[in-house]
Image (cartoon, rainbow, N blue to C red; front, side, top):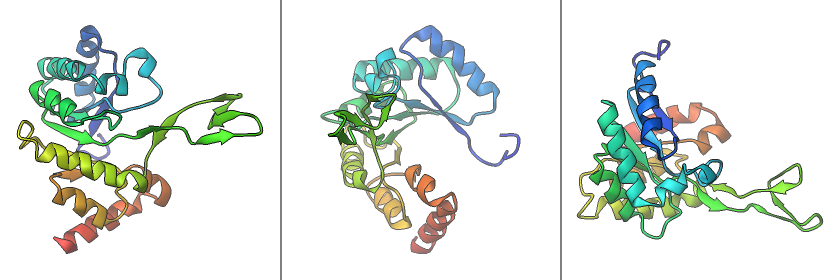
Length: 211
């Protein structure tokens, strides 16, 4: 934030569903100069066994509770990142709005197994012989993301709730499709990892020309 004072910095948080934990971390996030927080309720791997990530995002009551804590203990805008690993994405979105969320972002990655090594009978990827599940992302998930965005945008109970679109955004056309279905902003991760950060310039210039 010191190097780029004119840029917005949104901090992504994955913390257990314990009020004291959120009460402790939120002032620290404000102190570093963050402009907003994103509640990382989408991650399908890594912390679900500790009651974080998708383990929270799949329970609307938890979403509402944590969002309320954030709005109580912090003045920062709060974005709730939703998991696609759920039957109906409208329910967690409604819970986020009920908790006072300023926006929702979606989708996070889709729970998946890359494959199985049939010679060793181990799931891929594997570390020290132990296989694991992971999160499926990139352009293949874009149709799923677009559908879920549209569901929230046209739901009477979440109408007007700002949406940040995620899921397979690679070109300006992808970004425009998310915006057309109700998003006010889009996020990019996988494409930047694959093609480099210059892709952001291409997205901005392409969108600007199209608009």
